[in-house]
Image (cartoon, rainbow over all chains, first blue to last red; front, side):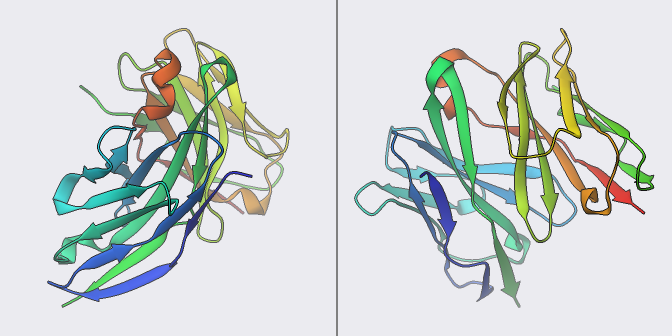
Length: 116
Length: 117
């Protein structure tokens, strides 16, 4: 069965240190993968996405993620955390199904706290 | 371009009532999806509409229904409200272009926060 596992429900880092948010997936298809971010009391926003082109994907605000098919992972990283990065992060797998329908599988989210 | 808009932003209802939420997608977007977000359950997919047809449905009871109009605007309805329906309801739109739909970015509205008393 298709699934998305965000390995940490909460991550806490100090400002200026690296960020690693982990996402593993299971899919029988050739999926696209997304990271969305939700800041407190704000809407969800796309951070970056993988669509079968380059496996290293760069997103907004200095974030990047690497698609590793052999490890079925799509971990999100940032070299240096900023206070404004504190938010909820969601990993999403998207599959093309019959009739051009789309099947989305959402992870449960990782809450990132950034300490001064 | 205007973003996804949702109305109302906040709603308080009592058990047993029904509620209708509205979503206006980004101009040109033909696909609209609805999600329920709660602290314990994360984002739960409700349904997706494309060209006035429901394309996908999540695992929610029949009390939850939706529709899409010819201008792509969408509404969702919840009948016989229960306390557990208290949540943030999010609408997302995307272009809806054939076989590349699964690669499309979803653009989310600010949500409607529903409180059931």
